[in-house]
Image (cartoon, rainbow over all chains, first blue to last red; front, side, top):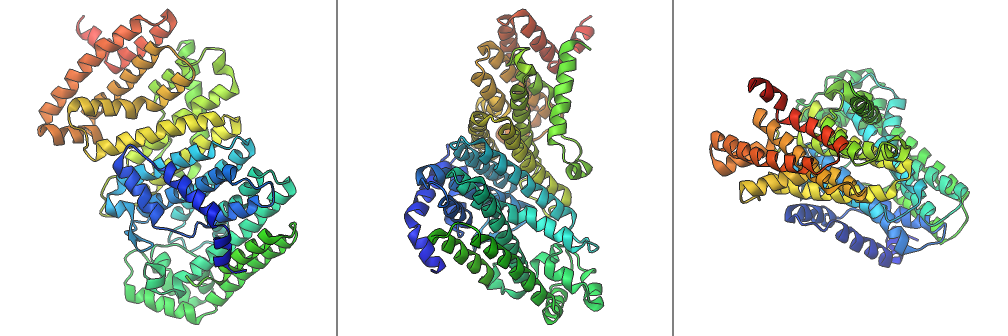
Length: 320
Length: 251
């Protein structure tokens, strides 16, 4: 089963979620609605809702109940993206102007807050306290991850465990939560939804490491931003940590600041690709992926288990 | 310090503890909790209700979500360069939003999540309208400010079936407090009025004239409150309108 087939099999349910998303961002403010719809139409793979739907297949699947959780997760993701664009001063996302570029920072902040509130309104349709406790905990951890990331910028004395803790909070917990919430909402037993969290968590770790590798190996066209942008912004990712184990690369990297010349960045990227940093990063990403697949094997077998396996492979194989 | 002030101070501390995050406090300082909002919330509940865990969490969440929205106002519309402090201010607002949800989720108050989220959406609609200068008159601006400042507190009060006069008085006091702050430290509202009226003296005159209207409306609502509630609201009124200072000046 390939990824396109998974999406086509779930098309009717994904369409219902799209409708819920459109309904959720309806507003008396034409600008807030336009900015929100602008974000919705910019697309994205809707990976979190899809993982949630697949997680729900391990319980009593009722799309009319779980659609609220699926839409809420996508809205939370959208709200964080619109604020991230302010934080990163990003002008383009997915080939489209960002809200902050199309309007301004303040409209972007208000849009994010509006979408976040819409997400919680949606989520509150589900009356299971455990679901809310898990999601709210995830959201605050996500924020702490971003706060730590900003404070760790250009801090070259950090360790692998700092990086792993950061990407756990920044990415992996939300993907784990997506799988878990689907299962809880559908009434799956505790040992199943906890395993689904572990599966999603490991997929998320692999996903983020791959993302950090692509920042060096992807083209500007594929990435939608120049290669090495993370390094220029001071984000110390896994390939950079590995590259810094070599003295020559370390001395070049620690001189990088927001004002470093593009030519110098390109030289560092060249040297980093010559080193074993990419291969070692790929190896760690694969290890997380294998761990995710092993966890999946412990879950009750079925078509949805195969779908999750395919999504995990898709994430592992992705080139941009 | 009377009992009311002691209880208020304790609640402010409790809220501050809930939403303080060590990394954020180092860079942007401890969250500034508005005591008028805390008073308004406390008055929406009875003395007995305020001792229950659920009500304390409901009050805490309402203050924290307001804090989230106020924090995001601090991001300038256009920045030549975004500083680390700006980035952390943006994230602080998001962290507070998460904490409001977490506070209510842990207390099992899911209906409050929905009720406050609806109020938050309306506040953001009004903030956007104000920022985009969609208001057509100063009366329109003042109405918008009133929704922005009091919608969340109003939602809690309405949910708890508080006295209409209390809701109106507190809503007007919150509006007055914002306008007085804008006169001292011009911000978004002042900027919009300046754009509309072209001259700073006209802006000040317009705000003063509206504050004068508010004073009489607030006093009218205070008169209709029970004695104990009226005393608390009157004290807030005196503080906001510098009554004590004016009494002293007038001899």
